[in-house]
Structures are given as C-alpha cells and as structure tokens.
Length: 370
Image 1 (cartoon, rainbow, N blue to C red):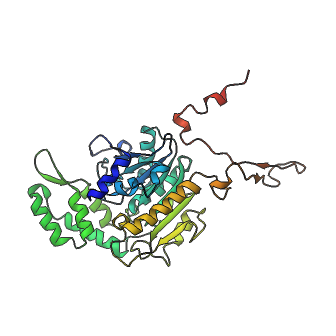
Image 2: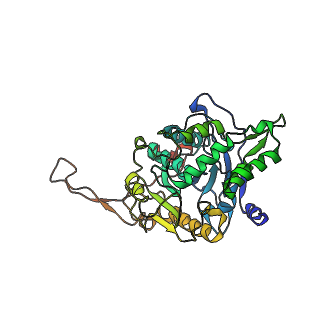
Image 3: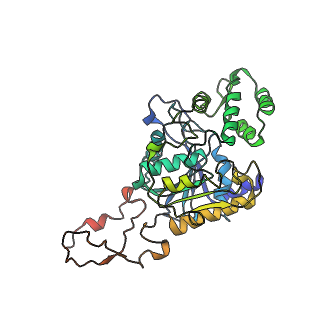
C-alpha cells in the first residue's frame, strides 16, 4: 500500500470539500470525490464513477500510476455516485436522476464536455449520462459492466445478501471492533468485507455509521424494481456516441457468451468484439471484478483506456480514429437536397474545443472582420 501512496506524488490530488447530506429534493444532490490534475495544461476531463460502496481512494493508484499514462491525456475526477462515499444521499436510484447528477457536477465545475467512465454500477451511471446527455459526452468507457438485467447474477445476489446482513445490525450501538467482528462472521468475500470496513465512519457523537445510505440501498436491492442498481431500463434509450467496454475474461458480471450483446444494442456505434468490446485475459478468480487489485490485469485495462482516450474519444463518428482528423474528408449524402443538379462536395467533420461553454476560445470568431 505504501508503494501505491508514493504514486500520488506524480499528480496534483485534491479531495472535494463538503460532507455527505441527505437531500429531500433529487436536484439538490451533489457528487463528490477526488480530482487528479493531468500532467499538461488545458487537458480535457474524465469523470470516473466507482462501483457501489467502493471508496474513491481505491482508484487513485490506478489513475495516478505514471506507467498507465492516463493523466497524460485527461484530468481525472473520481466520483462516488449518489448515496455512496461523500456524495449526497437521496432515496431515488432512477437512471435519469443518476444521469442528471453528472450534468450538475459538470456545470458546477465548469466542464462543458467530458469522457464518462465507470466500474460496475459506476459504469451504469456513466452510460446513463451519455444516453440522456450525448451533447455533453465525448465518449463512454465501461469497466466490467453490460447494460442489462443483472439482478439474478450470482455476483449480485451475493452482494444483495451482504447488504441484508448489514441491515440487521445497528452500528450506533456497537464499537468498531464489534462491527468488524460481525463483518468477519457474516461477509464471506474478503474484498466486500474490506470495502464495508472502509465505509465505517465515526460520527461526532462517537458512534459509528456507514458512509453509504444503507437503508436506501437495502430497499433498492431487496425488491426487483425498474430502478434497481443492477437493472438497465429500456427508457434510458441509446447512446449514439463512441463507447468502449472492457471486462475480465472470467467476469462474474459480464458473461462473455451472451452479455456482450446488450452493449451493441444500447450503443449502436460499438463495432463488436475485438474493436470496442474487449475481454482481458486472466485467471478464473472470483475477485477479478476489482481490477486494481491485480497489477498485470490493471495495466492491460489502463492500456485499453489510454488507447480509447488517445485515438477514439471525441473523434467524429464519420472518421475511423484520430489519425483521420483534418486529413480525411467525408462526402455529402447524395440527393439530400431538393435540387437533383446540385453539385455535392466533400467536407471535413467539425471538432469543438472541449470546454467551449466556459472558455473564450471562440470569442474572436464571432467578431466581424473590419
């Protein structure tokens, strides 16, 4: 762990101010986490959302590792979705509410467009934001997630059982050692046990509580409703931009044989396995969902991430990749105008500055030449 902490010095790290609060109005929810400044000035932004209950601190080594080179291309915002970490809490897990949380965060932090990414449930948040707000999204990168119904997957039923176990105790009446002893006896998975332990927080009163909204989460996972964190609703629609999916070869959340089809259904621009859908080779380890725990696997995921950011993210869909920007021209659609004698020509697809809304980069373009 000390080695990982040493990697943080390679980037400017800033934890977001504020404490998690329960909100009565969904539109008041504020997302928080940590921001890693990229190694160059004026870089675009990457918003990354963590898995349910997973602390943002667990992903800092992955993004700050200089060998992964992600900070060469983006400023990285590692965020907890609503009801987790230091983000605000609200009973709703509706997919549109999750998407709107992202856009509000972008507005408050003066981010016009961003790459959206996530792990597990965090990937659902990222993809939902892309579906509802494609004009604010340059690309979506999902780690170990597929937009489908995962409520009956073995991995999720285990998680649901763990949440049920947590709901059976009142942490405010127990000491930290008693809570950890309960976790050891009732949470079989060592990784989930570690995550739950990391989510313990001491209140000003001296009592202990969870950082995540246990009551809301337990209600969500206990009933097979359309807003379940493990269910992708049809109402979210399609994401028509560039997307990339990567998952472990023996993933318990994305089954290679069948679970890749929903990726192509929800993201029509995805070209298929080997192009925008990748399985990362590895052992049949039940903990492979947590890619940052395995150095070799982590590096491969980071390489896929870096290639997406450098070659495809933000590139016009009519072009193959970034190498064609400014070089390849696209022919106009034939007979797209009423005049059959119209002479059609080629044009170069437009690409916009990533933060045009909060920047004066185009200010002089609106001034007429005198």
